[in-house]
Image 1 (spheres, helix red, strand yellow):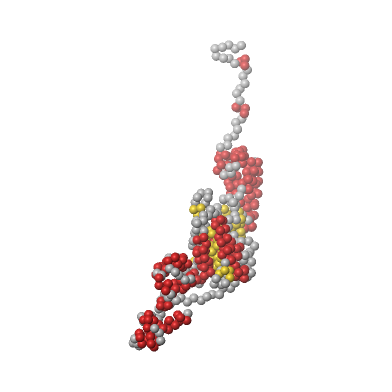
Image 2 (image 1 turned 90 degrees about the vertical axis):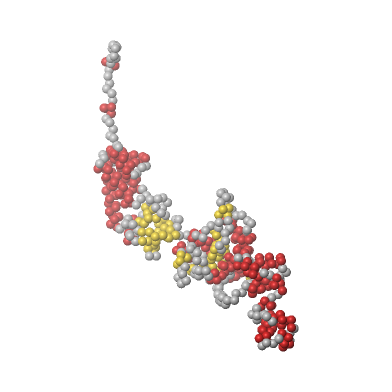
Length: 489
């Protein structure tokens, strides 16, 4: 460094004396240096440090090096390639000269280092790289996505391969990440992908509802990084770089047949990587993570179960429709637009962010899942009175009709739908006889066909049995029977 500073002083003084129109000989005498040194720096720029470059640097095509770096070729690889051709010193010396050669004349960007508090935050992103999986059953090639998380203080790395970046995979990767860390930090700095942020905004970004719901489950605050600002999440960017430069090259010749196999390989790598000493920090990521793990919040009793959201409207029959089934809500919400939060097991109904009621999802289609308390009291009384009247009417017709009515009321439909159908069936007794109704009801029960039109068709096609006495041939005495051309005996 002293020699470098001395050279700078010589360059500046040579140029100053040159500006005073002194000759090279005179300048050498004034400065007490050899004339060859003056000649060497006579046409130099004081800001030009190339004069201090070592001799080996003059043999390298730095324009080519910078071009390759712009193509995302790592400096380590370029150093190794140049080392095969030239006698180079250490890698750090190579990088120092490279940095000087690639400096721009524009003013440098000023950045402020932000101190990270242990256990305070985690950063998440996708790497953008893909490893293909070959299905052994079909031979199909499936691409993958790599989810990456890094604790902001320790830089402790987590990785998880999934098939997509969709909301389901994004949230399941978070479940596995928090389990891997054994706790939850106070907030998360995430990228602006659609599974996390619906609408990017510098002041107030709009989060994806499922992701926001997951954050509430874990007691986690979400702080999306600004668009195209990787320095807002430097630790996960560095973690992605580590995986791109070290993990992917190690598995480039391997073939994976399942996602579990690929993730198992990644976990084994991360265990070793997190134990390695980080030269800049003097210790491993595991060492620093041990300090912040005890500061993380405890995990909730169960991991977050993925939910989705959609809009619905409550119909006049106090039900809303969801996935071809009908679910009841209190009558005061009739005509209101509601928000549905649902999983593959349950659906929750919200009105203005307040939970109204939750239903277990029906397994079949066209089913009514009803809580009778959701109806107005007067409607319940009216319904019960109508049902009692129907039972009495069916009993007067016959046993088959009574059995059919009971069967229809037990069918998995909204009671008013059953009531209308039963009323329509019994109204056929005004047109057809009791025998026809009993025949139609018995046929319906026997064949397990309960549509109104089938029952009506059976009643319509009923025929009364013919009297057996009119169907018998008259009995004649044998001795009175005469055959043509013969004589009776």
